[in-house]
Amino acid sequence: MAFLTAQNKESTSPFATWGWTCLFVLVLLSVLPTDRSQATAFKPAQVKAAFIYNLASFVTWPDKTAQAGNEPFVIAVLGDDEIAGNLKILTRDERIRKRPVVIRRCASIAEIGVGRILFVGASMARDWSKIRKVLAGRSILTVGDSDALIRAGSMVNLIQRGRRIHLEINIEAARKAGLHFNSKLLKVARIVRSKP
Image (cartoon, rainbow, N blue to C red):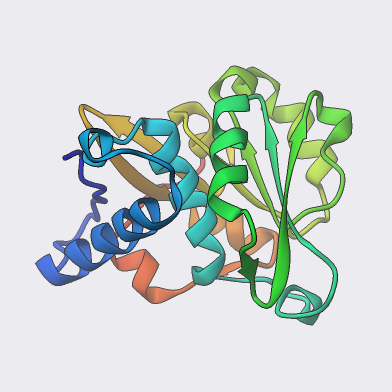
């Protein structure tokens, strides 16, 4: 089985890493359609979708409307239809902070609009400066799967090394947008900084 793990500059307790792993594996097992022969071989896009979905439980947005209400909790995906498809499966009939979840595929930067989380596929990394301008002044959690994005100012990176997905967090970028990560998440993540 491909386990989900994260590295920190300081050592993390085995329980913290194992607990994080179990959480995502259980989510995947409970919601993704699969037969027994496929149950232990999740595709990277499925694992990343589970990470993205669960990040909302470990992030605090600056405005109270992010915590509850009737408006949907929007997760936008730019440049990765496979991630978007897996998120749609994963969040079907689910709620985040008591709000219905909407997954919105964005075909272009102009379609980003309003949302709580934006996943930027590796194919769009070269357009990060344009994406950043569109997001200026908004409290949107940016997630990617590219080393270039996290160092350029994205907030979360889901990077695959070998058969494992590693979690990296740019705390400085998140704070600039008014977002804060739960300490439990920070304990299992590798902290990175933007390039000067």
